[in-house]
Image (cartoon, rainbow, N blue to C red; front, top):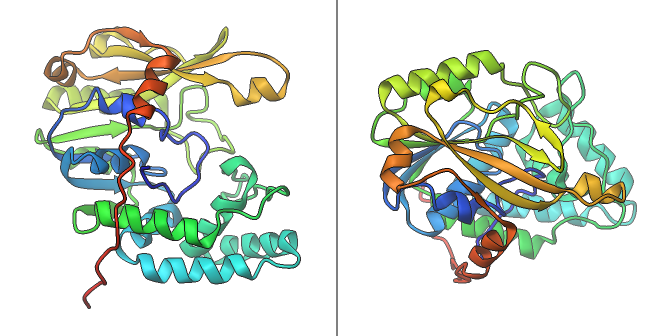
Length: 313
């Protein structure tokens, strides 16, 4: 199984095998300006698809957590184990205390525990940018031995081949070259420019369109997960035709929110491909149904990533 230490609602972990079908088989560097849990880069590295990676997220503690996972796995695993074991016997009080400490210090090691223990891995921030999601009362979070395997696996895949940063996405895009392939999973339309508790910061729609137009002018290859629909509800407007993008729709499965409300509704996510990328991978507009995603998941390699070498000072 491909390792994933960061539990993150909205992660592209489930769709990653399908997204990778629309990326080149071999890449010099994969760039993620909105890395989040880095699910696409991890999946890409597991298949040996890129030589190098640039993982960026404006959420600085999250970016720092990714850096610790990749470059300091043993230290992070020890810290997580001690923190996880300390939650007994009053695990709820422990969680709230850790959350308060994280909001005060922004220590990325504390964030790992919060992500592993919060309700459904659903990150939430208040108007002041503070983490305010509640703990899942039914579980104590990922067990330390399981977390160690995931962290060690990601480190083995990405160590020595990754640059991690916490920059504005526009600074990242400005420093890409024609040798790069860019995958973007920004806050979706409908929340851009407005405060939304799911995101550390929003992205202004018109500004973002301008950045895409500039990437087109420079001939940069990119794929973009942006907007979608659940049942009859549409999230955001389609990308403007003037950008010349190829739209591939990915059926992501039943909507969790609709299920909680007793309704049945399928979520479909949009993947847009720039013209150079679509031409390179031979893509055309189409819909991938859920069974396509499930079949790809069944084909995933279950190899072990083994032990990692100790860091040399």
